[in-house]
Length: 428
Image (spheres, rainbow, N blue to C red):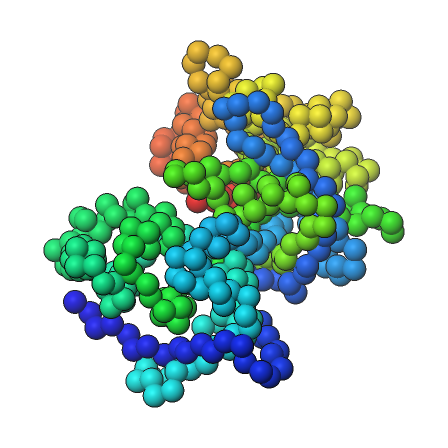
């Protein structure tokens, strides 16, 4: 078993000196400053049961001097569930000092080589803020972390279980344990006698990561009196009555009139409209994957130029419950900005139909748009299933319609990707 790292942090409370907090956080893929801006509106886009609760959020961008394009993304800095944080602090016997100013320093006499305070941990602040805004409380516990917990566990049976989980022979038990252990609170509640000092937790807990969201509006909607940005999110419901950290936090904003959040713009990728607006585009985005395409269509409308054909493939569960941005999409169809819509609702009929099935149904028109009209194809959605299935379906359509071999069709797809004519925005 690997040696446990040396202890290297120490924390002091109620320090009688001027506390100047530092922000040394690393912001992945940042392309701007960190902004704190007011949430102007949260509008629910779905109704009824058996569908995800999905919302459109409008952020105030007044005084934000940053250019962006439809298809770009922002990263939001979420907060952990406050009740979960309070329960965790209670379990650790830290409620009494949860709001008392602290200072964290390198431990005197530590044997750790070149110790540094992790950048996501402010050198001063309060534990409630630290656990709420900076620490990942849902990360998968590593064996080294469980080994550290052993030192602060007093019950012999719990110690034996932790020892087994940490051991080379306990890999199966460890894998089963981490699959069912969904939070730090759940982990510590599984070993009631375990009471680690907060310093040891800070040495092991990683940062609460920013969450990326596609921008679902055009910068052209802004004017001298109103400047805003829209994004879309669905609430993620997990097992054991847990919800996604960021989406559940955002949903609670709808009940808070004085609401603001921290965000930054991420470095842009290639998921942008063609420079030549006469280029035809095909957009494939079921569920919240449609979000950036609302920005695309809005942008093409506001440019007030002659634009190429736009074909949207969209899928939801029920046409009457979770057809996102239906009013906006209908309007784009009426104005001709959106020239064709292929839509499926997988739960409205006996046989489930998905966007890849729609592509297959319209294979000749689809292939003609790509091969003969040089359309650009955009795919936005889940990398695990949908994106792979869409790619495979398009390859099959090419072989069927063009009578190409499998390798020729795959080579053509690779060529489309290399020339930015097949562009994906995916999430895991």
